[in-house]
Length: 97
Image 1 (tube, rainbow, N blue to C red):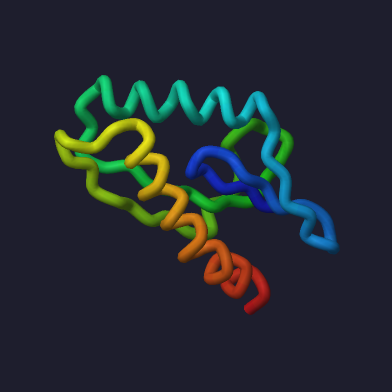
Image 2: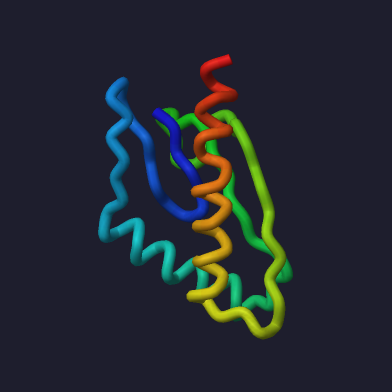
């Protein structure tokens, strides 16, 4: 099982079913608001293996994006999602090597 923290999509099983739940979407909204409120200057994704412990699986790939003062939680989400779309296939290819 592979998880991505862009803030929450998951790939599971041999068939590769993708899913994102309501709880994950709510958590994502809170995280994006916290990132903006804290004045963070970067965000990003971590794609990792999933194990028995939350967020403690081996990291496969990490990528960052910059955050400007003009960014909103919505624009930060768009940047992070762009990274997910750009690098998820690369992460899977890394696993398959």
